[in-house]
Image (tube, rainbow, N blue to C red; front, side, top):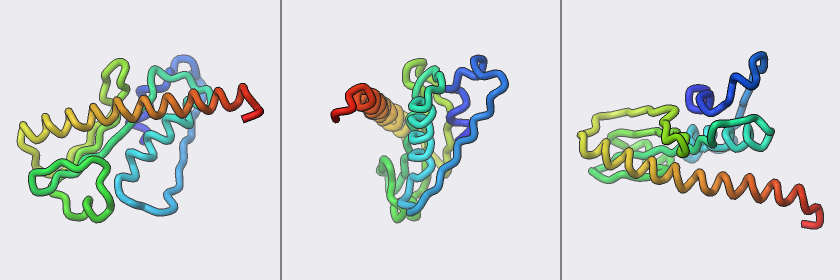
Length: 142
């Protein structure tokens, strides 16, 4: 999680700070690490930590020539390979990439394209959630 999130934090603005992010998974359903990375990025932003960008993360599973986005625990158990990507969409910078299994060049290209597109969509949802939280704080009647 540190490798995925650290590039997004404007560390020069916090020279003596230590950010300790912890999470507890109550029930694993597959694709837990990208969920934790995404949630931690939103939590840092919500806490007022200055970031270069939010960091959405997704996981792909490769099975029988198909790419599955956000695989379940069962699907992960039957995979031939997996790909975990975390990304800062605005500078278009991959902050972490974990690849397991054998991937042909075309499969890797297709997998990365799918993962990067999903990260872009996820960032939109993350941003909307943060904006809704701010609007809720400004309007106590809600």
